[in-house]
Length: 131
Length: 131
Length: 131
Length: 131
Image (cartoon, rainbow over all chains, first blue to last red; front, side, top):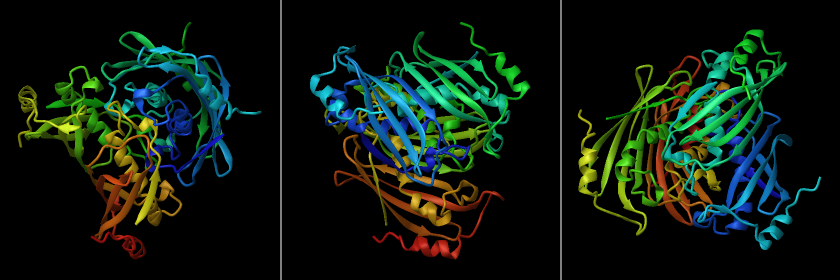
């Protein structure tokens, strides 16, 4: 499991007084940086390997500006050419959102999906979610 | 059905050369402005009525900077206290993303869900998605 | 002069109830898309030619969610290797923000500034701001 | 001086391969959170006290995804009803951007500027920039 601490920004609130719904996917993506590094250690886009195919977010509680947020990131499933990330978001010890993101292992040069390399698979497996 | 035309912005691309995944929910939300106006005609946050509880996006094709995007917005389901929006996103005549957003009719003052008003229900029903 | 119409999005408001300050530079950049096309007609990043060196914004009036915004974009100055854009932003007929953006004509491949091509200069000159 | 560490996000890059210009003002604003707390300790928008009137950013070096960024935040000037923040942004020990933000002390309820309270003034003065 990866843990990422996020300090909410004024620019991430909206007129309803809480963090904008559209910011939650951005924070969940921030939680996946270490996963990106498994595929692309130097985070260079010339060597990017992933393409998102599905994102699902459950919004459970409103998130506010005045306290840090903790994102927890696991691997839920590792398929042949794709894998799914599962994440939870907490503020003041309470779960506020949870969601999944499904990525296909993708070769941008030839614009095609590829089988996930064994070493990537091994690394991802270290972070599997156990119910 | 509502149609919203969106001109992609440089700031909405990412290092992989396409529109960022995190921008797609923002554009889908932009497509729902007319739905917000059914609840809150003047779009005043002091009278906001909706809270998002789930968002799901399928990413089908990469979206690029150099052509306008069309968002189509329907109502998929109207429940007692909640409803679901269904949306599709097109660029160059091809579907690039589709998704749903489920809202609860919410009273921010007392922080509780409420039954959707009949006049709101009637208005929403005019935009029902027909398969 | 270029004119760009922008429909404010809920995600662009902030907790103070108006459009976030950080969104104004994003909208001004949206106003510069036609200028980018002078350098890079297909808006392909593989052939990008500009790097921003300064941005200045005067915030004059608050901008709200409930009315379209008009961005007007001019060229203020054309130098040897750089040029400055001047922009104004209006809502309900009132000026709400104005600002400048100074770009250097830049070759990303060799990471160096270059003299602006004569044909680019001619095109930019068609949009000069006249006081 | 306040110091804020920021981990760049994939969603904050753009197609040119670096951090988007429009993200730099967002990160500088993130650096001002402690200043907002001087006026509004609980960061509640119902008691917000500031309105931005000018923002200026010099872009010095491109910023990339693969290393944390450090924002340093000082007070440059304290006037009667306004003050100016001065900020610098570093990546890998090199200055990448610097900028100012000028705020007016503002009463949102009556929509008018006000003289900055003495206790606020004293607190701001502790963070004055010394050349």
